[in-house]
Length: 315
Image (tube, rainbow, N blue to C red; front, side, top):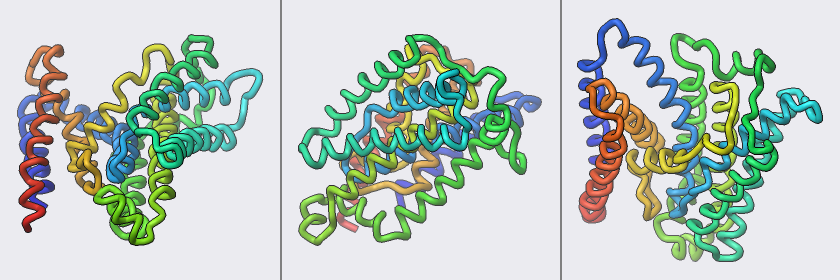
């Protein structure tokens, strides 16, 4: 609770500073763009958090995003396919789920380190995306207008569609993590995997599930990325996305040791991750210092996590 309260206070302070920095005539537009970005990137922060809660890590998120966006563009527009969105999108999401299943099986059944498995995936999936695209950009042009409108264009009750989509996903994730026995299993695995196994929890099954959900959400982000940008370039897009996803989850209170994290915290962490660079830009801080600001915030979050952990144990 102390950690969550501190996050809320930090977020409010950042937002007040941002409100002071942004000219009044551009404040509404800046808020809208910021909300859209928080909604979009919150999707992959949720996925990263599900894995981190179990004590794992996924470094392949950015490459899964790029591969999914590339595959989606090809399936929707390539003359050899030209699939209906109702078929193409489930195939892309299913591909993401298969990637997560492979990760989970390698980690649980072959006892390979999550870091190494997903690091290899980072290289492999981007290489696959570059190969199937001929190392060229793939886009949807003027096609799939209805799909773009449904997922990206326009707003719902004044809110960006990405934010509305994220809110729906966050509610589902909150119900799963905080109000179901299966979510408690994930926390138990991250807290003490051996104890969870001895208590009868199918630890391998639920660790695999966390990786499946993470990669599926990354695939969904890839679809949103394509709808927003209208094209994807496998050789340059998606770099550092996994780090932003992990950073949002960690800033939001997910401990890299596992067993901790809330959906509210993840949402706040993602918001902080994107308000910080927006604030530095509005205050006229040189762009080259942006990563220093973000890195410092992450380091501060890690220090707070370490200091608050003994207090939580003694409480």
